[in-house]
Length: 172
Image 1 (cartoon, one colour):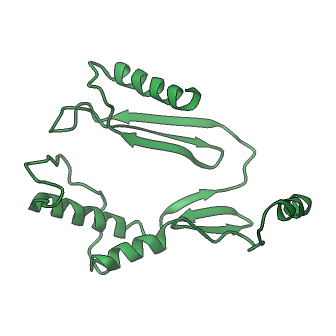
Image 2 (image 1 turned 180 degrees about the horizontal axis):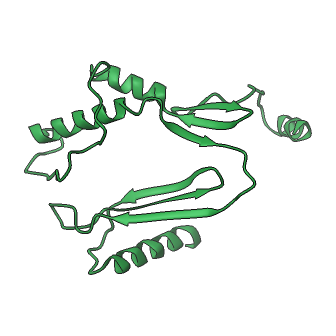
């Protein structure tokens, strides 16, 4: 490591700041038990910005069965349901203040993936929101959640389209 750092310092102007503690709003705690990343400070700042530091935490970011629609609201004029949904999300986030991802040393490096879709969940265009998460070793390695550009006739069709898009993005 020292040799690598010395070579990098010869090539680039840089300095050794020690162990990473904070990067792009992500807090990094490195110990003998592994690496723990979280966004506690970012969440606290967000709650402070919207005067919701002492709000009651909710267990879920959206109420069961609730669906949001555009309802003729322009980006400059969100309606009351949008404000309430935003407040609900902040209340949920306030309960996750101490959450994060722990990456612990492990001898078992197994790739595990999960995927799901809400099957035409958008009230505006009937498109599904699909997502996936992959873990490798002790923590999450990759995740995504998005609405596809197409309306699929089956979950297989949508997931095939998603895989195709990922392959195109990676290999051109």
